[in-house]
Image (tube, rainbow, N blue to C red):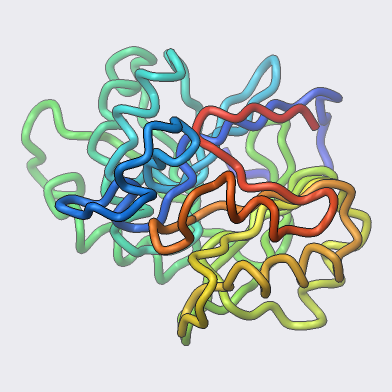
Amino acid sequence: MIKFGVTKIYDRLEIIFLGTGTSQGVPVIGCKCAACRSVDPHDNRLRSSILVRNEKTTVVIDTGPDFRQQMLREHIDRLDAVIYTHEHRDHIAGLDDIRSFNFLQKRSMDIYAEKRVLQSIRISFPYVFATNAYPGVPTVVLHEIESRPFTIDDIRFTPIRMIHAEMPVFGFRIKDFAYLVDANFISAGEKKKLDGVRQVVIGALRKEKHHSHFTLDEAARLFVELGAEQGYMTHISHQMGLEKDYNKLLPKGMVAAYDGLVLEI
């Protein structure tokens, strides 16, 4: 159940990077560039998503096409809720696989997103919402969120409004950690919500300018502007090159995240 306001917050939270790649992942099908041929596991990236959990509650932000693989890799056998940043397929396509958790937990999955995204999910997965749904399809409970903070059980989330080309999307602050993926603009007012963050994850697609994503330099400047202690790049494309090379271009305190990286906040 969604609860607005203040509730008990456990001290320790764990963040797992389920995926750190852009919409095609890395390697890209058929590509023979250096990143796609790399044998360094840090250059292999599934579609971007994180898992947030404490002793009581487990939440995933975005279920991309690799969701099943990510859950198996991390041995996740419990999931309390899913939050969506926006409705692009590389962020919602894995929703069908939440049915495994329906069976395990014998309950519907709580889904949190803003109104437009919930409408898109209904259109993308019509069989889930059919009046006479086929037995075994995912069962979900939809919760509409807005720009104000909310809690899922005992974890508090503060939405950060960002712009992805012309599309409004949400990033999220959790305690002193922020997850800002799929954007190329954040207003000064929304940046105020990030005052005091210590760890920040910023989507950075490539080095060259892009119409809907921050570049490496833009992500680096945002990290410095926010004054966080540690920064991580995510949503990285093969066009960025090899991690060992572009990590050298980042400011002190910032590195590229990689699939399976675990943080404690």
